Image (cartoon, rainbow, N blue to C red; front, side):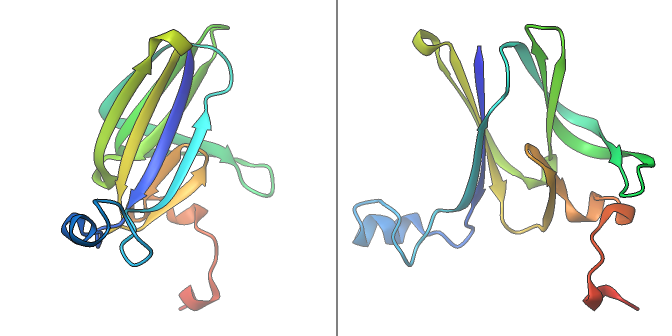
Length: 151
């Protein structure tokens, strides 16, 4: 199956009433519904996938000096994909960031689309495609050094 993931940041200031009254229910330049959307197709043929709520996600990788790091991130919604070749792909979102999720299956095209509608009221980090972590849960050791954050 082809699996498409859509991550959409919803504008909390969007007014459906304003859209209905003045723009036939559609968003407008002054009343934007979505601030941004990341959409991508999971590489490869997905045999099956599971959504795990209230899960822990392991953020792992390498520091610039090639030493490994691994951090457990709690309270995540994890999309665990088993590929036809036996490999796994994992995507994750802090559950507090999620406003709602939707799943659409297009059987004729052998496609599944997962939509994650995200709240814009909480700051987040996006360390890689398909991973959105609440800023307060993101490891301090991995935050990019910002001159304004110096003590």
